[in-house]
Length: 172
Image (cartoon, rainbow, N blue to C red; front, side, top):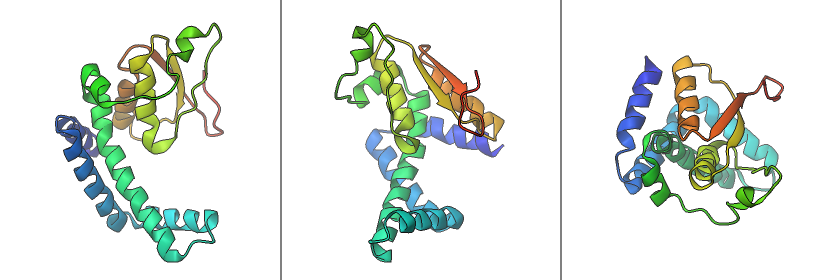
């Protein structure tokens, strides 16, 4: 039931202007910093391990900023999963050799940022190039959310995704 409510909110929010979504998503992330204490502890510990030279205050600023971007990213999934292709083409700006795959006789592998920008990068490649995209994904524990994720990533009809196993290998 909770996943269906979340997806309904994402569908509703995708109609809002991007600036409004950004502000709401950032606020959602700030709220998450206070509510999801276990994830906050993990973030702070990871930053401590990766950046021991930073002060605790500097690491906390980084973690808080991450939570704001995470909230925005989660809210904007609705835009990526539900908005029209035309709207996404107007909103997404791509720089670089996106059409390299179309000019190459050999397969081209795109390495895209993981986690927050993964769906944006995937949508960009699928919206702006003609060739089929292939990706690996992690099955979600909630079946409703898993179906929404798969449908959102496959909705332009020029992609295929493979579930990975616990060791990170693609299940074909």
